[in-house]
Length: 382
Ligand SMILES: *Cc1c(COP(=O)(O)O)cnc(C)c1O
Image 1 (cartoon, protein in one colour):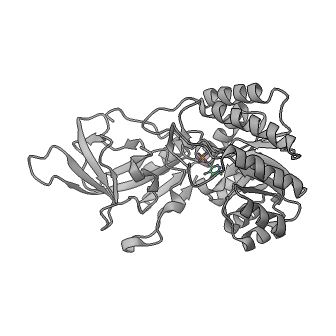
Image 2 (cartoon, rainbow, N blue to C red):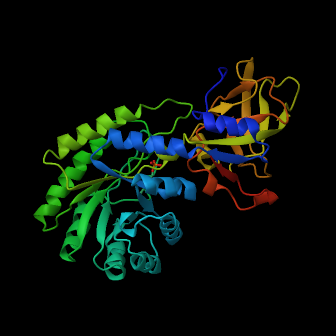
Image 3 (cartoon, helix red, strand yellow):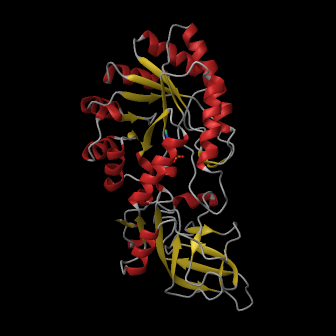
């Protein structure tokens, strides 16, 4: 942590230099979202991009993605409304949450949303009734090894059950496909090959049972730039392209990809201020650094220290020492990093700004509405 590091966006750095906006806030460079979108399309040209809106649902981002021709993966009626407000065509919206209220499915259907993800028969039944003529995406479970932010267990069915639900969808006369998610911030490039092998087998078995899955949804998992390096997007693209060619040599009618983190993480910086530097005893080598931003202000992904952000301070390059980093609230869970061996400059003092880099994904909407009286995280778009 001793070399000065780049925020990846000159526009953001200019904003931070000139801004006296109250901290904590996130500033996002929408041009960098566009750059990441273009890179991903080039890496996996066969796939249509469905942006996972939950990663950052801000209108300036959605509007830019609409202009670029992106489609959208949503989890709720409010996210559908946002996408429509940004100008998205309802045909380009996929309702990817496997857990939907019946009335929310009916609402989505009334908006013209056609594609719905399910992982059990009970959810398929709801979709078949509330969204007649739906296109059904059946989600396969994946163990998410290699992912820094796993999404396993809660979602998806085992392969034989996916085949069964696909067959039922076929019997109901519905178009169908298979989806999976290898886990967020997936740094093991083999994950897509492993999963596509299973998907290819599922598609063949479903065909033998009268269904005809016509699309495959590769999910998300592409990386942001955090403390531990991830492969380049070209390496991800090559791994996915090779796996698709290997397991679907005849090609696929439709391939979807659902990036969230990759498109927005690097496009944002979270600026926070040091509230207190504490050495409990003069002999303590480890300082506690309390920022005005913590787990309840958008840094939820520091849970279990899973996502380890890069930090920038005004004293980078000077002698540093070990720190525990914590947020400002009166909850002892509001500790960001205690076990991850973070070091910060010894000169760091109360009032200094600490920039949390690549913080454009899974921060703004993860902020509490007012725990301890602290206002929600502010957002700026440049
Ligand atoms: C969260 C989510 C995504 C986005 O995942 P990233 O790892 O951020 O790219 C994509 N698809 C589904 C179904 C999700 O739940």
